Length: 102
Length: 426
Ligand SMILES: Cc1cc2nc3c(=O)[nH]c(=O)nc-3n(C[C@H](O)[C@H](O)[C@H](O)COP(=O)(O)OP(=O)(O)OC[C@H]3O[C@@H](n4cnc5c(N)ncnc54)[C@H](O)[C@@H]3O)c2cc1C
Image (cartoon, rainbow over all chains, first blue to last red; front, side, top):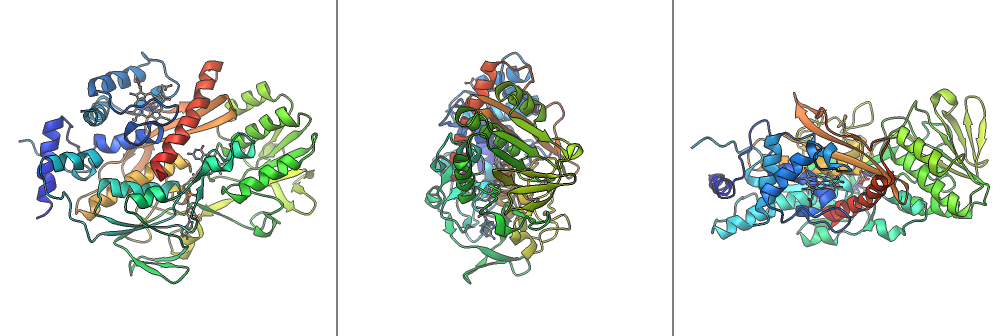
């Protein structure tokens, strides 16, 4: 019974913040984002040379990630990383990371 | 309303999700107050798993077992061996974990009993668990190469677990006269950190170039080729011309015996004498794996590659170097990304949900010189029950990368180290 509460919370959060629901085949933005923190720092807050990605709006993140992937923005490593994510995954990532800046 | 799949979703909103829920005056999201997870090992896999379990669900009772009060990382230990960084740069404590409410016990686990759901510690304590995560890293197959026993490591360091061994190798290199010979012998596959030997050669060469320019490095490799070989060799030729002699399996590179007293390595066709020898023995999963029936005939631990649950012992998960997670390499980055996936899966399973579809990233930076960095990256998905490389993703630093690019990658290598070590130990 207790599990009902998180379902409601999840739906509210999903609709309030435009975080796309996870599907069976795709990891949700929250899980995908964890792979970014090893370079960009926990929650995207970097202490060293890596750029901080915390606090950037979803639109910026989505456009930037796709530009890396398609080679429109030069990079040392981000093209090699973003080529592993499809549009839906990039949008989920951007939406999840983007809502942290609000 | 469209049916929303809850897979990997509700529980994993992390800190901000919880904060928002509080803002909406929601009651505590999850009631798993009684759920106990015991994590064995406070390295890249274990410490990440403990922290991310807490991030996903504060109410899970997490106990971390680790004998040392400080963890010294292998990543960046080659910068200590090369004289670029002090050991304090790569040493981390567990205060950050304790501050999150993780119960850190400094002891050695001697057995995981999957049937009784108990972990036994060396000093007699017994910890009960609902799920256990084991991330013990590697142990060495002592004696697999004749003469390469545990007794010789004070003369012939492996420096493949960081700490006193790192400092010993550094001390030996400092004491070596100019014109001396340093021999490094990497192990057969699979082993921890495939690009590690290449980076070690590079940073020792950098030290020799600046301090002992007449010295030589001989690599005796029992394999055909090594990770990032083309990039490393190009760097050595450019920065350290004539200093490094690399011999592979076809060039009498296989070491058959270590003669520690004579500082000599015996190959099929001869003997190679060195002033400083770094012999890295062949490897297997950390001893607790054998002691708990988690490893198979290969010496490594088979797992379902989605939640990293052992296929041999139910309720026990194995991550990091000890697990069989090929095609992922045995790296700290891999261990940490696996730990996050495993922690998410466990948080979901404890809440009665199925684990979601995982996705992994690995990147290994290596320094060829302090201002010359290279990397190999890969993104991994999950198909038909197996971890697979995502086609088209990843790859190496381009072979025609210019000096600016290489310098940037050296800066990013350090940035990566600072980010991941803070993500893991706080
Ligand atoms: C020279 C070198 C350079 C490297 N550079 C990089 C790099 O640049 N990038 C990268 O990603 N990776 C790198 N690595 C690889 C990386 O160090 C390992 O892949 C990583 O440490 C694996 O994490 P783990 O959790 O499996 O093991 P570890 O990080 O080794 O942690 C294992 C922990 O478990 C503890 N333990 C073991 N047995 C028990 C027990 N029975 N009870 C309690 N605790 C126990 C140990 O004390 C240890 O603290 C490098 C390795 C080397 C040797």
